[in-house]
Length: 140
Length: 438
Image (cartoon, rainbow over all chains, first blue to last red; front, side, top):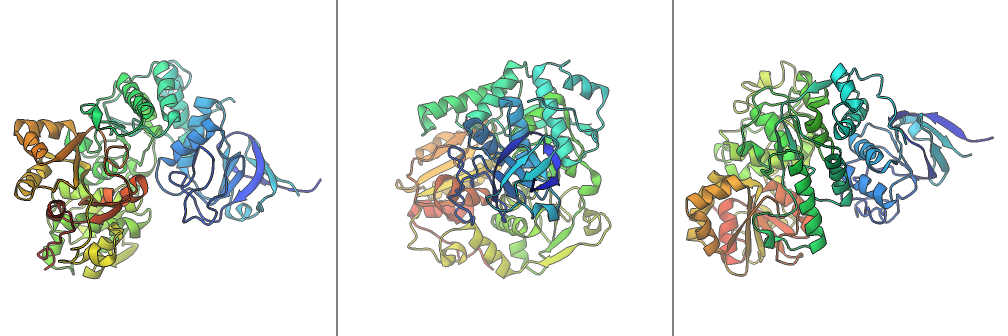
């Protein structure tokens, strides 16, 4: 069986699978993602108009206001959140949104941290999954 | 999905574990689980005691915020440290000021009630440091709301990390917070110096420029702790304006102003005895650039004295952070001399303490007679309060309004001094004070 497995650090544990959406630029969920649709609405972001819903969202870190936690939480409530979030740098804001979602709705995307080299690995559009111990599997 | 075991890297006390186990009620257990998860995320080795909290989660952003508050209320939530509330989604004293839908209004109101039911003090202000007993120097607190955080850390010398929605109430319900960031002495030393000493003295003591200076600092310092060198005497309203602007353009949660703020009696003290990582000289050109970035109108109107003339002003909005009695005392004679034109919406956001002051002085009636709306408990950039349709030009002396108004309420923005705001409201067109630049 082909494919790649990478060990990440668990920020918020969970499981999730979907196609990789790779953002090279950080994105603020607050003002940057419409929680009703999951669409990226930040007009200055290069991936504006794409959707984070159900995707394994690979991005360096979140940007901006602490209200981004609320937007991720609202996305979980409405079913438009990413399937998993894979970060390169520590981001408390998205982890907080996920931690609250787990308490409130008993589901949340896992949030994991990869080291910088591993973070480069997941290619755009690949099928990928994150397990409860923070392992990212990318289909080959 | 199970919440999972607490991260082994976080050392919990017996009492922390009891809270986690539900011995202090279901809501406290939820709060402690979230805190412990976040302590693990931040890499905290332990939690520490806090002696007060300020909560931002009472402002309606969506139904999930209400769901969370209802979960806590249903779990018997009661705050265990003195806790104040930030602005909510509507003015409870003047509910007709709300211009949104009945559904949104009902939800915003329910959210505010939930936090009231948890035992928080309903002061509904983003300037809690001007209304209530304030945290003492060195005291550990958990504050949310970016401008309040920067004021608590910088001006009061209290210690809070940057908290936001959800984790703020978790800290208030448990009296605990992750021992990280600005809670810890070693993370509070200044790292980057902004040297204002080459500016003309008149500019270094100009209160109206402090938001522009703060905005510049926020843009350039990243997540480092800035030190301002050469700032002349600034009062608390000035430091509040500077900090609010810095926390809007950047992630500033603490600044030191040498000779002014309590952890910076000297430059050396502000830097914690170490060398500055970076040293930036601020010039008059930088101030012009700062003024330009505070405005979305063309550069000439944004920063030039005596220029403006043909730019129509639709709204003047003041009071971010909430206007203090002293700021009202400055505003009142200006408005009496230069009453706003009927075509300009003139709104001041404030809290109930300032409102009481205005009523005692008989000033509220006078302001209203001149067409000035005084809004309490909330804020025009976070709730539908403005009556003027989006798309026009809003003028303000607040760096925070200037930053958030374009995105949040859809107005172009022009920044100016308080007098410029009042005179522009009178003219219905931008009025620039040629005396402001030496």
